[in-house]
Length: 106
Image (cartoon, rainbow, N blue to C red; front, side):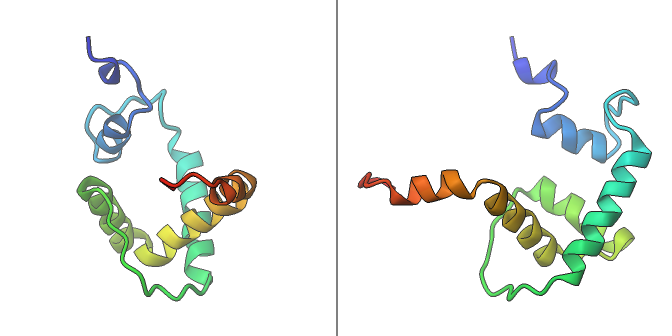
């Protein structure tokens, strides 16, 4: 039995619900998502990133980001850099530990 079909938090279910497929009102509260998204777009657009490196992402995720770019004036590179910078900031201790590990495969 495929567990991803029953799990509402899998990437496919999230992407499907954003695209309007299998949207369940109890999974997404539109007002909260819009408010948080608008705030993140504003914050990411206001920051300066050098955007000199290439980052490969899933094509479904890129499609959603492209739609957001058109509707919310999202700068995709800045948005992804903003998300990555926040992830690094929130997980800096684990990242430092992983980088200081003398494992030859890292």
